[in-house]
Length: 216
Image 1 (tube, rainbow, N blue to C red):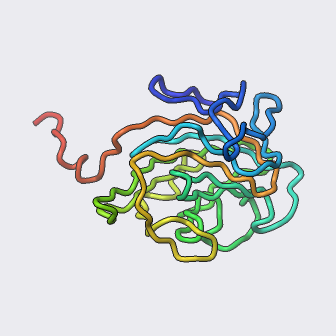
Image 2 (cartoon, rainbow, N blue to C red; image 1 turned 180 degrees about the horizontal axis):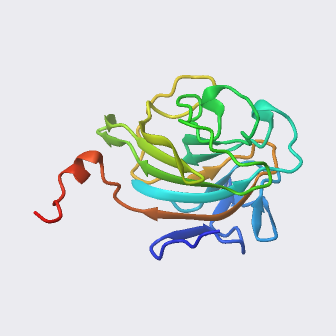
Image 3 (cartoon, one colour; image 1 turned 45 degrees about the vertical axis):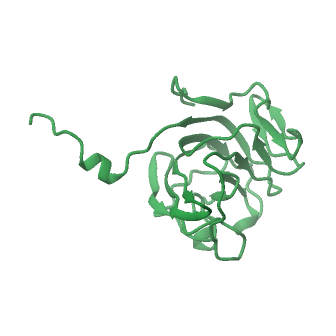
């Protein structure tokens, strides 16, 4: 388990769920051995909002022994701004539809590779998210996301076409420059640890290309 950067906001460090809520009530998931466990009561959402751009780190593990198959095995999700889902799934030797795999932008973009570890082993997600920009209620710039799964790039500056509804084509609905992080209760006892976030400007390839060249 890595250490969060000095400028990061710790969302879960193993002690309590004070940064989270279940709807308008206190968070209802359990803490066991310093780990947050999906244990009924619906999704969890951060009390604070973040954005427009950020790096989100989280670690999770699927139940052992593995139960179910496809979408019924080790299923959860992390929703950026509460509406753009990065899929969480026990995808180790477990086939499912492409845009429902671990680190898929759910219902839209499959991961470039299946980087899943065995159930019971800790998985890491590092997500770089650039929120969409709106002007006078209209989309000015779409959202862009990069995901590293266990240190392997599985989404590389993927442009989102909108939200990630179930069995529907995503569209954009104008929203603010900040939004919550939401973790999904899909009925499987996924465990989480070491969740942190840092608001930051994420350089685009154009920004990187325009920088100074060493030695010139």
